[in-house]
Image 1 (spheres, rainbow, N blue to C red):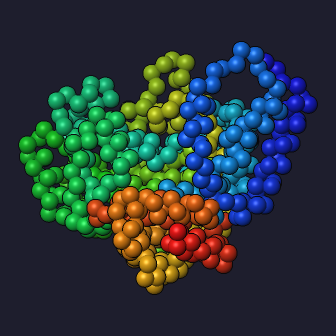
Image 2: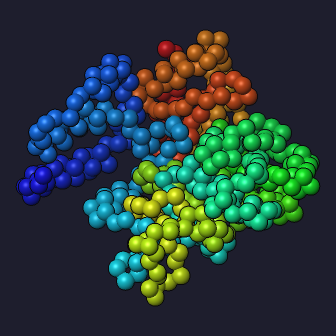
Image 3: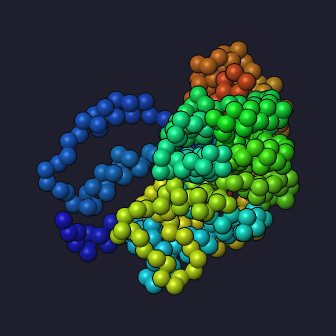
Length: 480
């Protein structure tokens, strides 16, 4: 199975050249190449058997490049505005490559052998620094595969805590013991509902108390009524989830301090889902949108969104380290490794779902150090200014409708022409935008009607060059 040094060198040289060429040309590449032949090719591809004999590394690389990479969407390019996707800074690309090269498993804190786990803790703390959050606010922290995994961890720790507070039940050891834990929120992200299904809370045990379509205003009287009744009847308890950055509008839940007070009063867990909204705290003009984030019992964010590091990278923070260890603590003797004189760093495998974890902190660490707080804050502010200007143009275009004033880094809009005002028409309009190859947007639904979302999260997105191209692409789609 060995590959010769010469073959490996040739393959790596090709990868380096592709990386350099892509870095130089990415802003000019088509954002997506719509190819209707892919559907037919996909079926044929899925029926390909495993070959009996291996082939040369360079031949395989050529095949992969031609069939997978050559026409792949430029998802880390400056006008890919789909799925709230960030880019990949050159520093993070290098970090990701090095993480793969050394292939460290950062599941255990082994201070006599490596500082990798300390780097992960430091990286997570530097993100708090970036967002003006005291490091001591969240002593528990770990990197996950993404916000969905981090939200799942939050619910798993939250259910353990509320069961202990209310009934002295250890769910990690004994299960729910006939009790019910509900999830209360306002327009919670689908990943929260998915997490509720995975951790045994159940989708139907989600209660929405929002008063609007953005989850901005909550019915606090209803929230208190639910929590109070649960306390009196003593068979139910709740995890309360607040959204910092609704996916369509970037709106933030209001009255977080009041929600915190109710959670404290009735022994409810407060989780804040701030997958991209966390970084509003880093922008002087937008920091007011995300107040009191440090009041959460647990907090979720994403690195592969606005921090512009490669997939996959999620962030999880909590005040309750000991509860994490109750839920995730490994019982195997061979994993019971002490810190052996190192810093007070909890074993990573006892803080989250995974026992085996790649060194995903390294790309973020290198990127944060390379660009610094100012570099990131300038990028966040530039993205926000881009969305403001795009929103202004849409608002002034009679063929388009801006559905919500721009709040942060999302633009929510639709076309006004009758042919676009149905679900199929909206899909066709989005397809027409993609067909231009100039930008990429996502379809969504807002207030029960089809809509379009452009999420601007890329460090490369330039107001002077990319805004005119973006406008040109939308105008071209309107004329199709």
